[in-house]
Image (cartoon, rainbow, N blue to C red; front, side, top):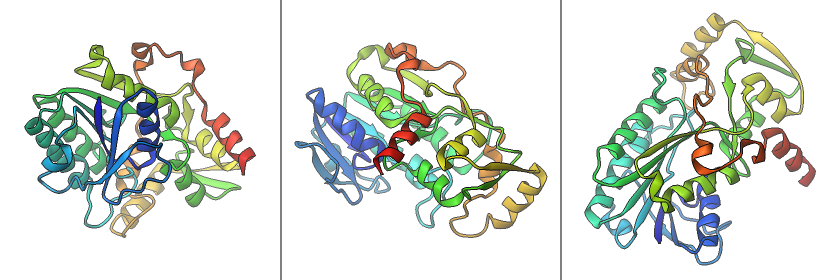
Amino acid sequence: MNVLIAGGTGFVGRSLCRVLVDRGHAVTAASRTPDAAGLPDGVETTTLDVTEPDLTDAVTGHEAVVNLVALPSHVQPRGRSHEAVHYDGTRHLVSASEDTGVERFVQLSGLGVDDGVETAYFRAKRRAERVVRDSSLEYVIYRPSVVFGDGCAFVSFVERMVPPLVTPLPGGGRMRLQPIWVEDLAPLIADGLEDDRHAGGCYEIGGPERLTLAETVTTIRGGGVVVPIPMAVAGLAARAVDPLPWPPFGRDQYRVLGLENTTADDALAAFGVDPDALCTLSAYIERSRGER
């Protein structure tokens, strides 16, 4: 199969490229500034900006398209909004795929997009899913929890923003996450491309652990004490810093603290995967420290 991966040189994209090449597929990794570093031999690269309305030239000749293009949920950079990247970008890719005869379209969405929490990220991701569902394409949608691994935004964000010894967290960090290792997620995405049984599916994917935010942070930071910040105080702080560019914690992040980012019905069984065989966040962190 000839596969175009939008966002193919990014964090998830590099892992997916390796899996697809190992399975014998022809892969083109597309991004705004493609960098072949970390990609396996044989992967082609091409320039692609999903905010451009006409993507026909880039999509032509491919049997399948995977849309991995994403902004981290905690940022809203000027000039490249969640709406422009996630919603409009998906519209443009879907339109080009329909026009060029693409057979399978895979969309990476996010866990919690339809759980009633209104953020710019969730709203754009939800609208993007609707575009995919309403298209004429065979599609598969994935909604993972937090994805971790080499080069991920989440772990580096925690290491950069959270103090190592005393960690103040709104509400004590009670919200739960279900982190999944990128090397465990990539084969599932590849399965969605290859197996017709997954066509039309929307899969919530989580890892083997359900960790509170406090447990997640202390695992990444290697310990420390969590100091609870009253939610009312956190809400006032979020409103105060929200107008600033690149705020680490604004109103959207405050709203997400009320969301359980865990699967109600983990779809791993649909792919024949045993959760106990997956990598835990603590195992990954411990291994990463040993390699430094």
